[in-house]
Length: 368
Image 1 (cartoon, rainbow, N blue to C red):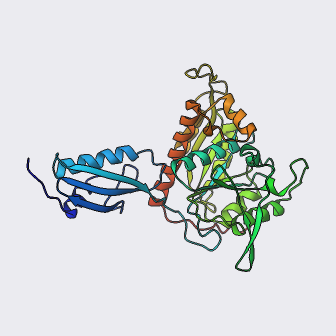
Image 2 (cartoon, rainbow, N blue to C red):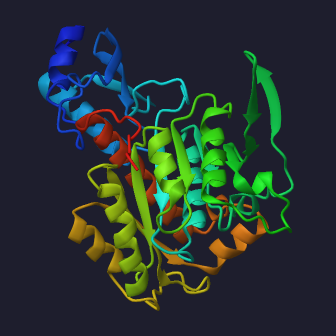
């Protein structure tokens, strides 16, 4: 075949046949195609994904190539650049202007590994190329500083526009602030509900977060003042519920899930993460021992019609890494890395779907 000249209109027509698998609309309508360059027997363009952690990026890329070859010519060279612009759920507001998505990480009961999941989700999202922050609002046990090896660090204060701003601690590329940074590590501090709620408000309004794609909130277990303060202070994109497969954990997870679904709160449930889903010994990576029961996370997801974002195995290295001050995904265990990467990709995917399909959130007005 001889030379085949292409124009941008033909390229757009071809790509308008490619559907974004999650959002169920074509890439052109969604504004995801940019910077089309055409030449003789060649086309270049950029696909702007809704998150750098998109699990379907290779599928989308292949479908774009196939559409060009089918609708224009099988001989055209196709060069595709993938980039990402994380979508937001928020009406822009003065409190945290540069933060696109606030995600509550919640659990019905303590001891299910919620902080471990938060820390590793944050690192997995960061590794995909996203800008990530963590607020550790767990007054009962602020463990994020320990998991990031930052327990001896103190946030600094910078005056700006006549106001003092807290500078979040930055560790391994993650910006973080914790109730643990405000209290001596060896002393017991009794937090009354209003004190803890005031601290959380400061973490939002008086902290210089800069630009963030995802701000993860590590909440205390159960339901409390902190949870109400969160939904009243900022627009929450959605909540993730962490549970283990045990019946007692699932029963408590249902209570936490039900709180976010109350009509006056109405925070979308992005999905469930089942932690300690099975035990996998380091020396037998292909073995799974279901010591806490099996399938609990999936049954909970099915019951409430929400996604099961991931299943995290009980691996000794996850605990060891957290105790040593670095999230486990920084190590090389493929079982751990794959589990957290898959969960982070599923979370980012659900955030993108939520932002495309539901109206933007506002802070909740609760009459007490």
